[in-house]
Image (tube, rainbow, N blue to C red; front, side, top):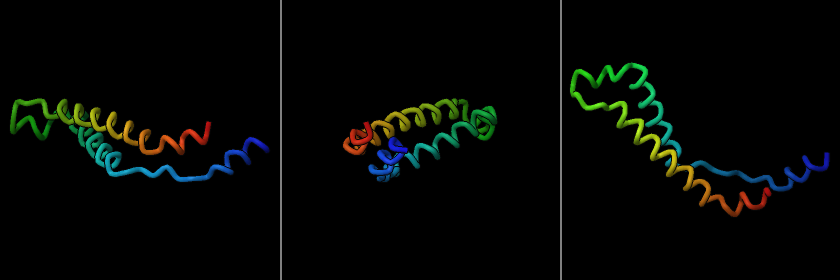
Length: 80
């Protein structure tokens, strides 16, 4: 029971910011485009829009993850 009480002692919220929400939108759009085999964009252009969207989603994932860690670094140090 004691380890559980130690964790409760440090109760705080690690809030998500807008970068994570934008990242999720790009992930959903990119995965949908990939599952549809670039269907809606294939009629408009020969550019692989699904790959471009996935690249943007990966970049936003890395950026939002780093931003999350930097923003909450002091709070995360309290846990360990």
